[in-house]
Length: 562
Image (cartoon, rainbow, N blue to C red; front, side, top):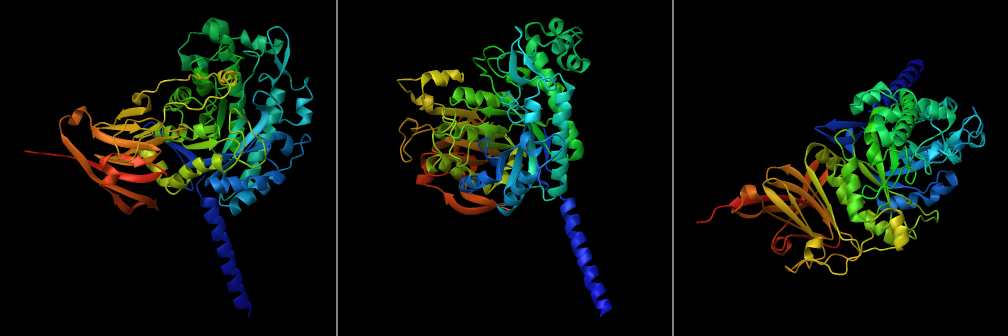
């Protein structure tokens, strides 16, 4: 009897040990780079973030019942949600991670991954989410002063007291995650939220002025190729903004570095953008944040930040797509950390995928009855959710495979280029968008062309599927497509409310050509699963994606004639 009990206990011990070894052996999420392309890996495999981000104040257990139904309806695989300094350290030195524990437990039950947003020293410029013992003590935690001596509600990056207090709380959060989240439910962390300052290019306090007169750090000189001097001598008219960006970047980097020493998850910062075409002056936008003109400053200042990620609330095509061009860099993986949740933003998913984005996170996706219109939709309902769900359903079924393809192959993304939504002109222009209204449309307005090498692709919008009529666009603008090069003459194509056509480029000019084969299918454990062949009506007028997205594997060919 004793021997039997001993054997059972021994077996149980090794079983439990094996489970823990398996859990502990699971790879940490990480960002990898290959020939200037990037992927986020989760459980050792490339992972495509098909995310839903909540409204700001959904970070309490009582709000979660209003969050999960939308996540499910969207077919999102990841929830992006804040964790506020004020809720984890309401009294200095006393920590409460009960919300984090509840969140992780519920996410595991729903098989959804998490990205946590650390709302602390900065949340859109201000310390609103810092605990009362921080935001009400301006002596210990000083705010930014303008050049004329006015105090702004934005904490200064020049005080160790603020940095050390924030860092201490963040370290405790990361230490707790390491302890409770062996399953790697949390896959990434955003450090702060839309850092920077509105109303001033930088801090002009006495403490900041002393630093401003000091030599520019050698590390930044090396990065920019500048000769030594103080900030004004080195950077001239850009000195104030570059100074603020450098010191906020260093502040954020020290917090990230300390957090990674505890638990090295990927970490990123998000950006309240300036308009790349009409930027205005520093302080009119969030000065010191990683706007497009200071990405190089941030890259030098914050090496422990894995990526700088734009928050896109420009509705117009020209500006939204330009932002992606600016932030998709060989040294910076593109991740759309926030984007408006209204219908016109959905089409930009295709541009993001074409840029090799790690993921896409529309903001305000919950039923907490809040709307940030005109940046997003006026109300949360099925009309808002369905367009995202249509795309997430298709890409979710091949998320790992798509992320692998995007890491290793060329991809191109397209979205309908004519804007049909025009909110109040003043509000539109307040966000810096062009807000142009064209009274006459030309078919070329709805046509995009891309040289793929041997082949050229043409994407058009608003055409009958069974006719050669010129494109007239969709109302509202909603179309898009993405093309991935799988091999010679072979492409993966996904489209929505668009027609995709192929023809030989100059390299094959004059050749007779045809579709060799067009397969609709899906992926299963990395393998392509054939469903049916498109032919005849489905290919004679190009590849028409009408009511829902399809995944097609397209093989092109040329042939000789007498």
